[in-house]
Amino acid sequence: DSALTASTTVISEEGGVLRLKRGDFDCVLNLKTGLGSLKAAPRVQTFDSFLRAFYSWLLPRGGGLLIHGAGIVKRGKAYVFPGKSGAGKSTLSRLAARKHFLLSDELVPVRGEGGKFYAYGSPFWGELQCKGKNRRFPLGGIYKISKAAENSVKDLGSGAALGVRLSWSFEPE
Image 1 (cartoon, one colour):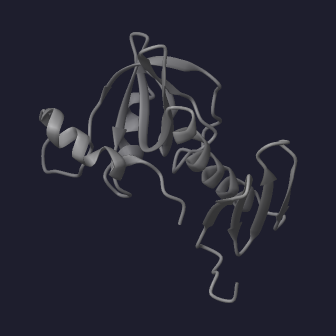
Image 2 (image 1 turned 90 degrees about the vertical axis):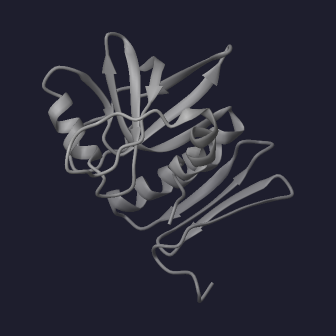
Image 3 (image 1 turned 180 degrees about the vertical axis):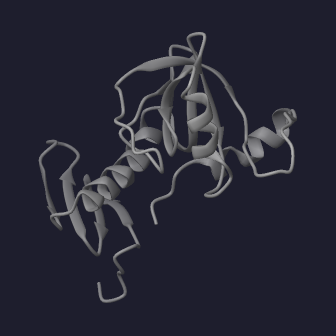
């Protein structure tokens, strides 16, 4: 444990027990009984980081991913804009918030259910620090966002989109 830093999250699953550990939290969960414990530093950021790690473990087991991106709802459909830090997720969200419902400017849960995909509101926010709302919307599209001199939309094509899909999922640090 001496090599474990405050920003490195280690997730392990062995013998029906899940463990999420970082310098400021340690969670042990019995997956059979649903009972467990969480020891965490008394900071909101610590609990937020724990939840991000837990959801990044949980969602793939339920047909979903936690996507590092902005989520915007337009005409009843969710559009997700994954991008690296500094790509413009919060800027896009700030501009869209004038007319549209926001799911998040940081992390958007997406799940497949009954042959369709849905995006959800989340408690995870970046710069905008808004309160998440527990709502789901049919997924209308996913558009990779990156900083550029001008606005444009480019079709990645199905092969390229599949190739970058996993880079959009959230990995706890």
